[in-house]
Length: 119
Image (cartoon, rainbow, N blue to C red; front, side):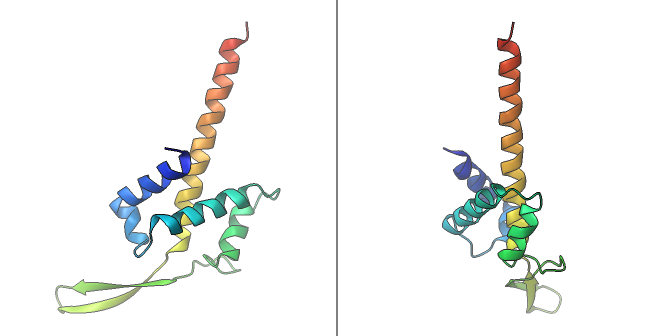
């Protein structure tokens, strides 16, 4: 299992995270992961903000877009209530943080290996 598959599986297995991505499958999450990797190669320091704006996860003034709707059953009123939910922002944020964490761990292990190999 490679890093992409592990991060996506962890996301799908976490019920709290998966709630934000209702109606989302592993293929769509894979495309989003690929976008994170593609934008991370850009030379700008604000590559993540650029990704969020270009994928319409946030507006140009930094506000999070609500791009999905969910039906939540209210027990008291016994009615379904439509609730707008943000989809792209939390998913991109999760994918970026997990990828960055993995890259930092790899970098630390490589430095450790170099330091222990140097006499």
